[in-house]
Length: 597
Image (cartoon, rainbow, N blue to C red):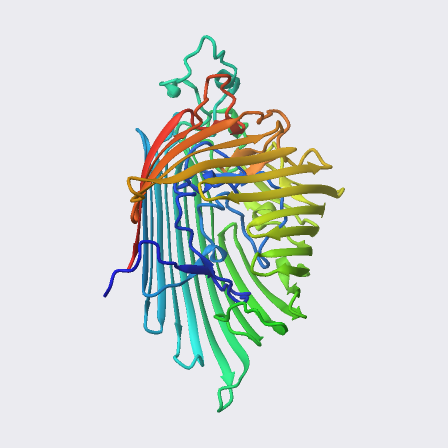
């Protein structure tokens, strides 16, 4: 087999999950632009608060109401590390694609990512591994995590029958220190007299010295579909069945309960805490559509796509104890008129028990100015009425206990956007009613009065022959001070790329900045694995400066990255979550190797 060019194109598209849509393939970016962004928290488009090190809990600074339909036990605070079905990719390869990435942070951490995709006749499969370990800088801060996913697609040569198979395993083992006991001891040091690098960060006392968490999730999905055609091969309709299985096991353990975090509140034991959430769900979805899960988005002047069906979900929870059955009716459509107007919508309604009367309605239209340039303007609107995560209604742990019958939460979001190439500007208006959140006493509360959030977002990836500039900027305002959003948050990345040594070696140097204005960012409760609202500690108004240097020789890339380079020069206020300082000045090296055969 002949060896392909250094950078042969490979495409992928979002995995066609239960509510599948026609596939939109995008070519994988093989440039050096994102080579040093090995941790998804480093990506320019991700504006998140975190607990300071790779792999720990994190939360978006951008308020949003997106939530999957159906039953939800709990929302884990690892959206960029713990994968879901909607995060998977379906690959279009001929015949293989392999990508390896290893990163080492001096003295305390490493990360490894591997992807392999291959096509063998009618079978297309992919495997992705993401593993990381970080010892941390403060007392009892170690993180070990692993995410493994695999996908397989098969379709008969005549495209009559096919199936899609996916599996995800997420594992996290966290040393939970609860953050610093008194943050000002760290933040209020005088840069003129204190060392810019504090080598012994273990001198700062933390909330927990022995607390630990272990979280495992499994997700399995298989979709069988039948494309009904006549004897001449004319397509009529697709009948599909999807089976989803989800499992979650979450445990927090501590045997030293003598600190302020527990506030002397014990329901089971005063010696040890062993709080857990464990449940599984099985869902069967039967649907009828006039398009197949493997259909792609085309350039037709007109089309009318419609799908609908029903979904039954069974939930069995050990902790908290509960059994639940629900039935969801749904329909969706995608219409194109006169080649330039795209109209789309989704509606779902739940029946029975905890999610009874939960509903979702989403509609939008888009006008095409130039399809080749990705030049569009559009409007979208979403209304949802949904039940809070079940642990906010019923929960029994050693330090938390409640039983609530909440009223349904109501959310409305309207968006207007403009895109060209990969640039996007958008305006969002959100109205939220009966919002359920965790307060600073670690108890769920429901807001009786609705609140509003307005947002102006801009993403601009500027590309020239040698120079690149990526910007993600967000302006936000919430009418209720309980809703923690910074007025401004943004990231900016600038880099210069050229070829040297007779154009055999590609060289890149770049810097990136992150800044957000002051606000009362949410605190973190490691016992419940939830962020909570607080009005005591202000974070923000700190500039994070990072720089990197990268080289590429054929398919192999190397990079050196320096993070938070001005740490301690002007202040020590590099905290995005109260009590959890970000890493000080740090340095990483990494290698990336892409194979195309």
